[in-house]
Image (cartoon, rainbow, N blue to C red; front, top):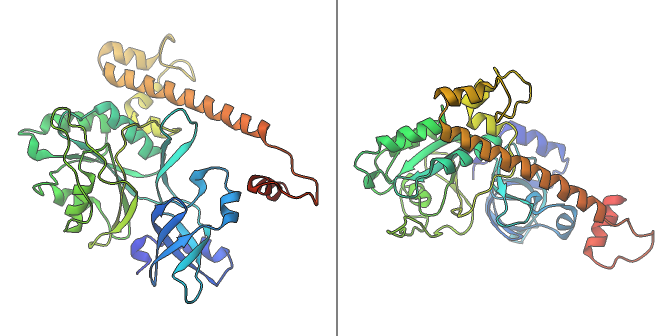
Length: 362
């Protein structure tokens, strides 16, 4: 395989050379299944595992290699199984808060250049959900493109497209039909050789069908959505890196029934550029845009220059992010308090966790 076509660039070459380990070979994670991997290398795809010392060293699961990561492999002659000795620093990543009450991030994709945020032109279309996806994409340092799929189901999709453009700001909005192929030329123009694109969205919006169209044949399973509520089922159950015939690489992801943003510093402002621009004229620095006098944002809402639903969505996301930041700080503090001191020298370790603590504190 040609590593350059998979996204191997001068920056990764420099980092890999700094490892000073000529016996290792570079590769890109194509499939992850717990701690077993499929990695693309110059000599083809290889099965790989992470060693126990790497598992003991990481603080969170998100630090382990994920689909899209570039890694350094130790290949044993005569063996088809390689060992991942190191993962190179990520230049971009898309994350969300893991489903449920657990305060932990879940990595959706790493080292991607472009994110196709897919929504269907049916009852599942939701501008507020689109806003949340765009915040996540922009925070991850990834270029977004909004894809409105299933245009064959709507006689006049212009109203959907207008709503999406209002939410997306300057982000491109492409209307397509994976079933008929309509609009796929515009989608293909967004893809560039050696770049990596990821398809994200809820179940049933047609992410796998779009990838099949781009590839030119059925390589990803697809399922029909329920007619009465337009909800879909997961046809993709794992993340996978797929090289396309045109030279780009795409990542298919499972549909998300629950989506909570993990963090957003610049992403929130970039997703709501009109609020950010208005905030520059607020009288008070650090204005919350809720009750302060001479607030330019509140005045714009009153004058009708800022839509009330956009304003309400901005406040809701900001409150969620502030709460999550507080939870992360408390979670980190509790983790430090419960961390046990290293064992005295020479004392046997009772389990792997203690061994990890000793190694960290040495």
